[in-house]
Amino acid sequence: MLKTAKSILADYTKAQEKNAPVSLYVRQAREWIDRVEQALPETDGKTITQILPLYDIIHGIAYGKPSDGTFADKWYSAALRNLPKGGNADKVVLMYWIQHKTLHNPRTVGLNLLTWYTHTLDTWMQEARTYHPLSNHTPREARRIADFLQTADLYAWTADPASFKTTLKEKIG
Image 1 (cartoon, rainbow, N blue to C red):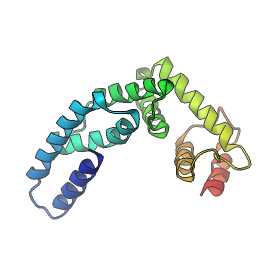
Image 2: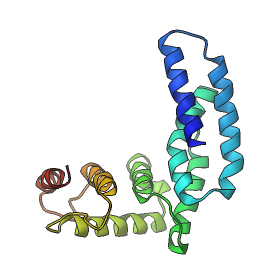
Image 3: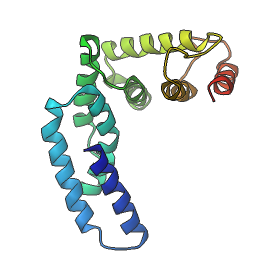
């Protein structure tokens, strides 16, 4: 599903750049949306967190506007709820989702989401303050976490967030 979404997006973008007809890609996008909506109940958390960032983009191609967010919120929440049960959802994607919700409409973010978000951010900050920051993660995951921390409001964790972010970027790359 992920590969198909990327292909639709690439082909649609090329067609638009060439002012070519896009009706084929609109149809493919609608079919992809239908398949995703049917498949997600049987999909693991990692795949959910890989697919959902593309869902709004493909929905925009299919229907001329992004989804209302309800569908994505439902499945991000499901992926998050499964983490304590051994779920394999991408925590960085979930952190970006909660951050976005908090910035754009904080009233939609429940206490459970905020608690998980602050706990995860606190854990990452502790790991990032070590001599070898985020070394218990793969290099790719450490960069993704460091990139997230660059976007986060860290005043509750450090007196000088700008300096912390600069140092982290230098150490992680």
